[in-house]
Image 1 (cartoon, helix red, strand yellow):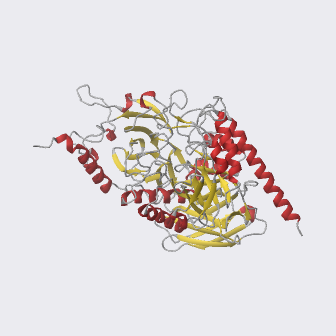
Image 2 (image 1 turned 90 degrees about the vertical axis):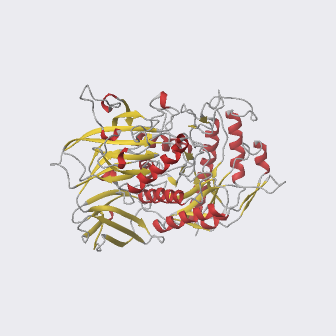
Length: 630
């Protein structure tokens, strides 16, 4: 019996994608040398209206034999050629000039009702002018994030491919730009895949599109491509590393902190790398939530100069305590998804960050978990300014393909990019490796590889993961935390939903806890769903009363957990999820937010706010008594 040709299509498509990825000008996961501090660079924004073509069959990428058009040189067809119909006899079945428009940054789901549930490929096209006579010597196209896979073309030629929906990537285009008008085309695909990061099944909306800023960056021929400025673990020294990129790497590097009257120069080595170590001046003001002091730091070479606002603080653990600047701190936190409930869709800008983190401040938080993927750089920089400590993570979520080497490479790439982007942010104190992953040897070794990478990239911060709890048969009221991965983390963090997925709220009063290691404990999730405005008694599911009662009982339970050092309840604001279909209540929203999708606070918001106010008062009293003691 002959096998129908159509049965080979999925295989052929997968094979051609692998071949294209192999021969692309960059690795499958993008460049490893993203430029640091991009918002301090001279740039031309490419945000705004882009022309788009929805392409569910990917006709603009493959011919009818499933051969990619961009695999031939020169390409004879494909949407990336951006051809315009000028000859009335020509047969052409696309034209960006007459296509619909979407706003970038932004997702397509929330901008077009027809694309609300769409998962597939969409082509984006933006033309822009470039004046070669006014430009510096090097140009880079920077994308803050594109979900999930992006094939990028400039003036009909492929720049490369990037995989990963929440991390930045760049391409150098110095020799690809035309004087005058240029055509930038992306094929963006947000389909879910078993071996991807995240994998097939998640509890958040799969927003597709160019979801963060697009910039054309300018740099000198040799420039400061990376730098890291931090206090050492003792707080006695400011340690600085810098990296140059270009043809003249043996240059003098100077680092200045004008407000502290600090300046030091050093010669970069033949690879353009330099290290500096400065004694911490006695008048340096430590960054903290109470006083989020940032200093202007200038890093310059003989050919380049860049500036950043950086705070200085230490973070460490001592037994079951988390120490910020040497003093114990209770992390009054909340988990946050990167969505704007008023506008709808993926959050991306400074105003979005100010809205979400402003609500967290109102709640009484000094800490936030940015779940379940890297949030925009704006979120982290606003947290620096507002004085909110952060937990950041990558979407190693639920059941990843633990034994797949390509999946591991993907996760490692996303983690490396996140750490390199945000390691100058004082607000970031925890790198998280994963969320609710089932225990197995393959999984633990996968995550340990991520830990090893992280400690090499940034040994100054704490490492954790949102783990799970379990009970022995017949002992459901006794919760045990003994995940073997906890041996590799600085903090024991776990999610628990006693009273929601595990019994009713009254069970919370009976629960006891067994914590396996002498480490600080963070409850990284707890909560209950509630439709804002829905009332009932404390046993009515999805009522504000049920949620508030669960919170009241849970905050009392927290005090019984050995080593409790903080919590990030789930979640600040209702967010969209295809896993939540209950009509009239969920309607496609996860309703565990303390704030409804209309921006109105639920009763549980005030329960947690009151608890955090009391924790703050208790901490202030203890500190005052300690300072007054002889």
